[in-house]
Amino acid sequence: MQSASSSSGTQRSAKAQKFHRLLSLPTVDLAALRELLWSGAPEEDPKVRAESWQMLLGYLPPVKDRQPSGLQKKREEYEELRRRHYLPVEAEAPSIDVDAAGILRQIRLDIPRTSPGLPIFSHQRIQQLLERILFIWSVRHPASGYVQGINDLATPFVVVLLASELDCLPEEIDVDAAGDDAFEAVEAGSYWCLTKFLSDIQDHYTNGQPGIQQMVAKLREIVHRIDQKLYDHLEEQGLDFLQLSFRWMNCLLLREFPFPCVIRLWDTYISEPLEGFSSFHVYVCAVFLIYWSPQLKQMDYQQLMLFMQKLPTGRWRNQEIETLLAEAFVLKSLFHSSPNHLNPR
View 1 (cartoon, one colour):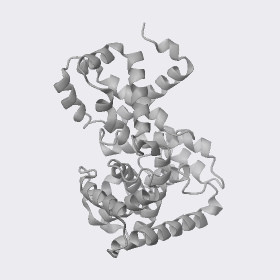
View 2 (cartoon, one colour; view 1 turned 180 degrees about the vertical axis):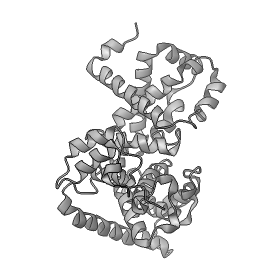
View 3 (cartoon, one colour; view 1 turned 30 degrees about the vertical axis):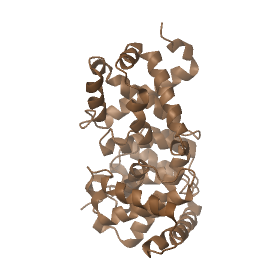
View 4 (spheres, helix red, strand yellow; view 1 turned 180 degrees about the horizontal axis):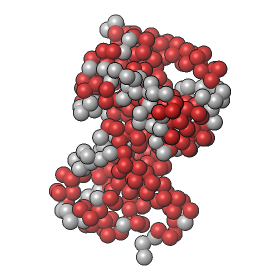
C-alpha cells in the first residue's frame, strides 16, 4: 500500500505545500503555524498534522536541531513516570493506595466504552495504552484526579500520532502493524499532548467543576443575546442550560460529531492563541445550538431531551465544521468588540 504522505512535493496540495515549507525551516515560526493550522491540516498528509499538533502543544521543539534530543528527553521522562506510577499496577503490588485503586477501577470501566464507533479502541493494545496514560495523568493531578470524559479527550491524540507513525490515513490504521518503538512514541506523545491540552481546562474536573459552570453560564448569556426566541422557548420548557450542554463542555463536542470532524475541530482548538481554546469553544457551542434553533423551537421538554442526546450529525463532514468554526469566529469577534450590539432589543 502506498503511504498517505509518500507523494512528491509536486503532487502535494497547495495547503500541504504551505505546511511543508513552514515545518522544514530551521526554526518554525509558531505564530505562522497557528495561523495555518487554524484553517485545518491537509487530510492527505498525517505526518503534517501530528507534527503541527505536537509542536503547538510544546512536545516537539520548534528548532529542528533540538527535536531529536527534545523528544528523547520527554520520552525518557514519560518512561520514568510509567515506572514510578504504573509499574506497581502491572505488578499488582499491595502498596497501591485506595484512591489510586478507585481511579484505576473507574478507568477500566470507561475504556471499553471509549469511542465505540472506532474499531481501534476495542483493540487490547490501545486499551492498555489508554489505561496507562489516563492512570498516570490522574495520579499526577490529584486536584482533579480521573473524571469520566477525560478518556474521550485522549483519543484524538492517539489516532493522529498513530496515523503519523504508520504513515496512513486515520481510517486505515492497523494497530498490529505498529512496532513496539512506534507504539511507545505514540504513548509518550499522547500523554504529553493530553497533559498540555488539559492544562487549559483543568478546572473542568476539580471539585464542583467551576470551569464547566462558567462556560455554561457564558453559553446561556450568548444565546440569550443572539436568539432570544430560542432562549425563551428553552426556559418555558424548563430545559436547563447545564443539562443541555454539560456533555459538550465536558467532552468538548467529541461525542457529537463523526471522529474525522472532531480531528478537524481540534486543528483549530490546538491553534487557538496562548490563552487557550476554552473561550472559543463556548462560541462554537453557541453556533452549534443555534444551528438547530428552528427544530428546537417546535419541541416540548421530552422531545428536546431526546433530540439533544443524539443530534443528527452522523453525516456531517469537514465542510460543516468549517462553517461552524467560521461563524463562531465572527460571533466571538462581534461579542468581544462590541457586546452591547448583541443585546436583545
